[in-house]
Image 1 (cartoon, rainbow, N blue to C red):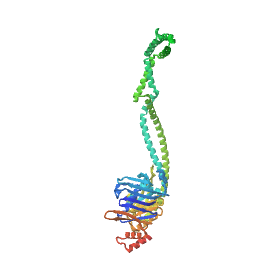
Image 2 (image 1 turned 90 degrees about the vertical axis):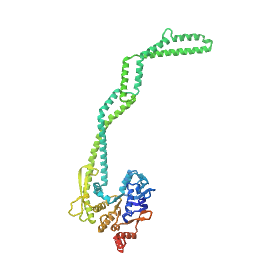
Image 3 (image 1 turned 180 degrees about the vertical axis):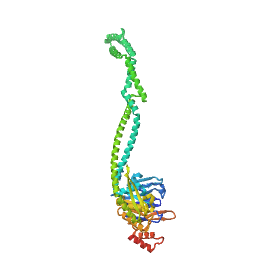
Image 4 (image 1 turned 30 degrees about the vertical axis):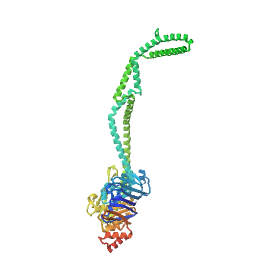
Length: 551
């Protein structure tokens, strides 16, 4: 329920704040006073788009705030879903700056406009002449029946499943497309994988092979060189080791005469031992180096094979080839995985379609059960509004497939005159008739709807006299179950309000501004008397105003 509305710097409103009450409230004022401006400001905090053209003072931003009581309207789920703190009362705020940029807030938490509108639609329903067009909309018609039947929660659960079905089908289409594309490449990638598997690649293999091949290729040269060196050191008749041994023997014979000679003799002996060990090592290496032409051929073939693979896959190392192999394995396994995913998705879609078809059947049955009562109540209310020969029926047909609404297609059929066949609303009803029909429908579902507030903008279009009084009675009755606000020019409706607000315009040489105030009992009499009079308020008009207020 709307408790307070605050407006700053919006079109003709400088700074305005007004409290609203429960029950049925009326807003009156002369044409052009700014009633539509007030409604426009309210629409800003309900999620309507805005631009800088709404600024009264172009140097300041516009701020609109609404305080709402929301306890008891099952809105906790909305706040949980959007990770907002739920409180019994909330403030919706819009700020529009000089550049037309807008910011929206729910309890000081910044939100996007879609979220604000989503919540606004749950708090306030604005019924205007333009919105009557929705009466011709099949979605609205079905929503009305669902509201009357009290199955909104079941419809919501069904739609959750239906949109999940749409998402699953979208996923299936994507995977099937990918699977078809992968299937065309399957043989090629499998061939590449088989080729790499046969290669039995090992990290670090290529450098080892090249080193081994290099050794084998130069084996004869290596053996010859090592043999020659070893001959010089120890193999020939006159060799380095024999000469070192003789030199050591000679030096040792005189080492006792001088310590320095002894040191040199020891060093020469150490070198003899080291060179003898070197000779042994050279001999061992030479014996292990062997000449093997067949092995050279095998190594050459292996290395060439690896280089061909690397060139084919445009890489320069075995390690990169192994990474490519992993990628190809994933591609091949992904295709197998996609086949399994497709199988699972198809089974899930079939199961969900069966469940949704059953749910849709139950929804259809519950809708059919209330159609007759719905038609009767709408017709009775229209009769009270002066449409005594009007007829209204609902055509609820089942389709062969499910949609977001189930399996039902609905048409509201109407005839305002005797002897005229029932036709769809767009082909039969005038604006005034549609307005009264919409009021009949909304008055009926107001007792079943959880919407806190409904605002009627000139619901009195096309009605007058006794019918206007009946419209007022219906609005007053609706106000017992929800907050109802009506912008009206008719005194018969204004007199039914539990609360009366007057919109007026103040002008001077520099500015024009719109204001609103809640009228006292005596002020209400005067305002309704003005609505009854052309220019001068007469005693008769005052008496009639009192009668309207006291009736």
